[in-house]
Amino acid sequence: MKVKVIVTPKETVLDPQGAAVREAMLHLGFSAARDVRIGRYLEIELEGDLQAQEPKLRELCRDLLSNPVIEDYRLEMPNETK
Amino acid sequence: MKFAVIQFPGSNCDQDCLAALRSIDGIESDYVWHKETSLSGWDAIVLPGGFSYGDYLRCGAIARFSPIMRSVVQEAQSGMLVMGICNGFQILCEAGLLPGALVRNRSLHFVCDMVTTRVEVTDSPFTCEMPVGALLHLPVAHGEGCYYADERTLSELNERQQVLLRYCDKTGRVVPAANPNGSVENIAGICNRERNVFGLMPHPDRACEKRLGSSDGARLFESMLRSLATDRAAA
Image 1 (cartoon, rainbow over the protein chains, first blue to last red):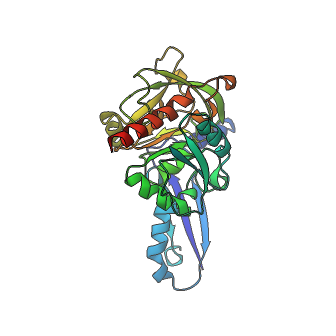
Image 2: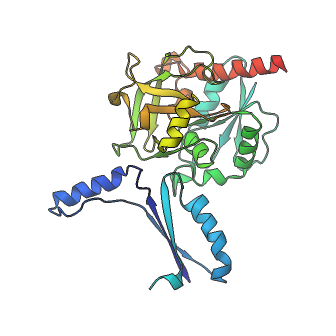
Image 3: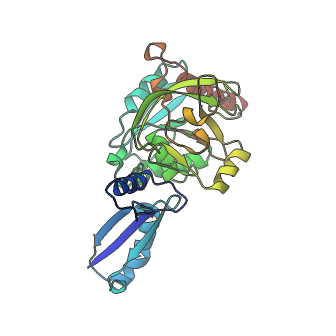
């Protein structure tokens, strides 16, 4: 079974990559792009009891997969995804 | 005094650090592989620059969990001098030994250049050999050297005089044009509250010999040496 982790830069952190991509979108005539933020997406294939692993997963999201100083994360468990 | 240079897979300034440290009278230095688990017997620790673990995930994010890092944290907490240069600075931030984080340069460019930095504080083991306002010409080479900290952390850093170096122009003015990477308030190097852990993006290790364009980096290592010698004499 697969869990997904989405890491995005915090609102307060400048994202020059996102800004460059937004600029490119504007050049391509897509003027509706007001803001672009670039993050990271991870798919983690798991085995065993998902519920039992959730606390450790959250810990890893906080300590390894994201840096709470500059990033937020979202952990999507299978039962949460529709 | 014995300085340990930690080698992570992907470190590439370990040799520069070793050569620079050994060029200074009174410093002995050797490598410590990241899989080692003890740092007892050393007087100071240097985390060199490079691309530990290929900069995967985030710069320094994986190195932070290397076996040796437990001892680095332990020794840092018990007062040993720790200097992190470039990738070493990133690792110290990831490890929580220094506040804030280093993010992608605002220009998105990898910068490889000589910069001028101004010594902001003399009251630290890393800058005690220099007066406030001293200018150090040092090379930088990084893609993720933009120092970021939230406002509270930033005002704490300023209040407690933890900013040791700022990017400045050749006359010592801290101006936006002298900022190579977009760091907040031109911050080039900071120390922790206890003042024994120091991280900086410029490379003092590549500036310890006039032939290389500058020997200003040596003054940081000499400061460490002097402060260690003073401590030892007092003990």
